[in-house]
Image 1 (cartoon, rainbow, N blue to C red):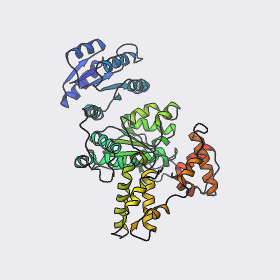
Image 2: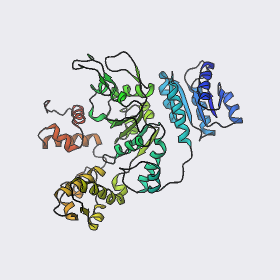
Image 3: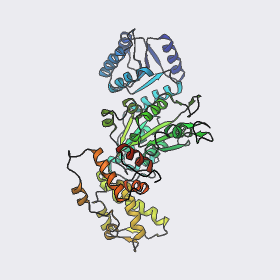
Image 4: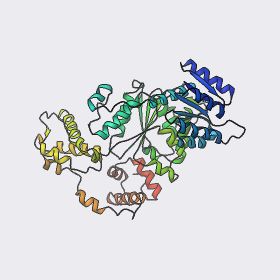
Length: 456
């Protein structure tokens, strides 16, 4: 049973007809008193809750009722219905335990989708399966490992993939966030539709609208033809927004609007277009900390992280290092025509002891360099040692400043300064050395006021 709580009879009627048509049993309540009476008789599977029930439009009535529902029925998902002007109120509701918020006027398909997603996620967890069982259920072809931390991640994404829930993937650089995003898409109902990847760290604020929403001819000086944006390319499929923590405040507002309304306008056009996409985001930043510092919008965070998946660092799943190394070698032996290529047992054990701060990406690079340069088909410890990044890890750690003596931003500033000096201000080389795109480096150079040559 679905309980709809709203004091507007027109909205009650509209929602009731919509969900009965979708096969739901529906009950109605026009305020807190009627809600209590319904809940005495029956426990709903899900509640749709409006935020205002009186002349007072502060939303306090809705928040009080939400807290009462969460106290008495903590397992029943609640979706809030609110106007765009009261998004801050909706965020308060999410903090109080609501699962999602829908703005008026809503799109029927999106509202039904949100309800079905919340119901799916509210089902109790099954027993934790092992890797073999997971592979029988889902397509995780390119994800290697059997560590319990990784299996917990795979179990989560397997469960949510078939919904349209927005997923936020967090973790250190190089932990495989893009592979997880692809796995979510490949195991979803949208798997035959486009999967569009967007590196937000590589898009300047001036190009953001054109890249994501497209533009029409004449929208700006160089707009000689119409261009389809990434959201429109991803229609009916999934869009992967990588490095979402790098998005500037103005672009955050524009992104929130399209995620909220599922509509956008190409740059230079006054005609709105509707889009149906599943949104998957990723970042190596602490978005909660950024929200606290006013660097990331709280309402946008709640919009993208209905499900949050944190990937473990490779050092937290060291037993998977040999499996990953063997996986890379098996691919490379075919690529380079060396069928006898393999890693010695001693080297396999030794690889497990490496800290690998660059995670899977660093391990892959080390393995590939070793394969290219090793004279024998049996890769030994000495072969790998010669191809590690110069400088022992102990020296790297001792060179780090003591905790509390420098902020992360100050460390970033000094590292960029050192890299610019070392590479004689050649931006392309500095970006490669720091493991970021040139566009992301340009943004940091401007942020810190570090001079650079415009023709780099």
